Image (cartoon, rainbow, N blue to C red; front, side, top):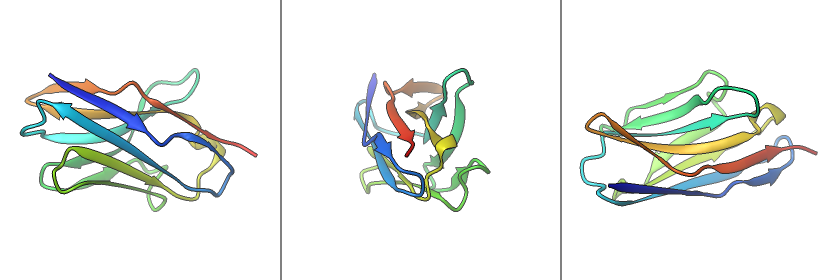
Length: 115
């Protein structure tokens, strides 16, 4: 089993920045991929960014050039640096880890972009 705990969400003004963190614990050996997803009220959960075990990254078009996904050397803490935030980035952000085809989710952290 693996547990994921997100942190770093909050209220920020448009144009501001936030850094989300996701700490993985438990059976973290050989994680294949990790990623950030978000879900706004009344909308489906959507992919924001992913990073594979070979460090290849992928971003949703809506966040390219503004968000950066990274992880620590131990590959057990995932980060999402979010710059130039927009009101439409408001959502609950979830961390996901994939291992041998099984997905593990965190509980989510709220990000609100508003004046």
